[in-house]
Length: 520
Image (cartoon, rainbow, N blue to C red; front, side):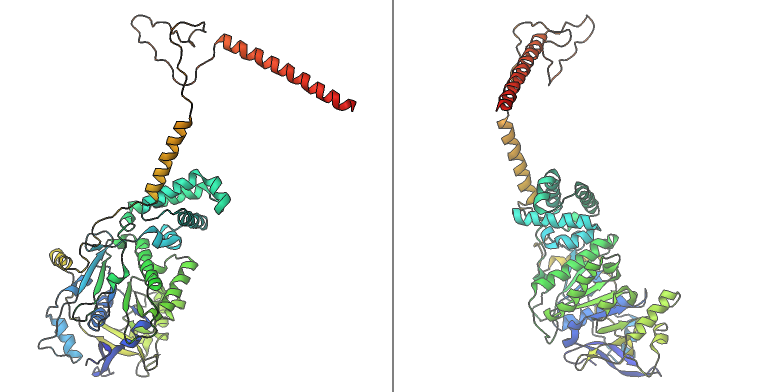
């Protein structure tokens, strides 16, 4: 049932449960984006897996997040199991044997534990996404924008957390002077940002910022036999910090948008990007960020990149973005609450109706591995929605073991490129050197302290002079105080006389001047 230039999803059924026809995603519309939705346990991960397999076999690189840890099995050959054989028979695929295979996988991990390290620099992240990561206020976002402006103007590379911390320290110490040049810098906002950076550091964000930074070309690789590499991001630990997860995926999407050239509508995508747990991208997101996502999703199509959102509820995706998603796979939804019922209606209304059944009713009755499918066809119009049995994966269903994962990493084409930190001179080192140089210059400009006369005794008040009386027997002598020394009686008298003379002379001069002015 496989057709050239098309990705096989599964087979649709007639009302009497007999096979109707194969359901495909046309590769030339693969960059028109898509949506995979459904309740927990309805088969969304398997759908993501079979789409990734299909794109890979077609020579299209794939990037996807492994939220639960079981998507890693795509790097191992599938195993014959009863439910796989049964599903293959249902949709008319050969089962003796079923065509299992393993796929070229590159494992990535922000923490460097289950894959190659993924990093970016502060400069590449930029103030907008960093503000999103820190949940910054408008005032704090303004200070961050000024910080990046100062870094650009001063030639201060912002690479990691300590670079931004050093720059913020500099801004706090010179707030008045910098405010006159760049706009108001609140020391309170600077302090708040520094506290947020400390929280990010404790959550592990320091692993994400630094060098060597990820090269976009390394997630767009193909193998010698023409298959697209599947980049799998280990996100099970990353999900403990959902804001970092969402910000990273948005940063990666933005980098693709900025770096890739325009290609129009190619015969197949240059890269396919899966956003699993997509609702995390939009939760509590400010309007400016949502607009940024909408802009990137709308325009990145012309770069040959397809973006597929995977989430439980179609209401998780804003309407402005939902309208950009042409390829739809809808698994079962439950209608227990008013919000669930609204989600069912929303999902049903987005499909081109099929007179053979009612979408809203079928959505709540779909079985595991079954979905309503509508893809773009012809001149880009959506196909009539069909009730479809999704094909079984050719790779393993379930996770790799730690040993199997390590074997895949040992033969990875990026092995050794990202696994070690590289800390070159940047804002932290440059600002530290400037501060040290300024301190040394100040020390050299200060006059040498005058040594106290210890050769003989002076007439002093008791307890304030150089000649401290000896401590009584059995008691420890009190150490001499350092710093400011009280003046002697003679010194005080001389200063008093000088002040008196100066005052009298000053008054005489003023009277003389005023008298001469009045006579004119």
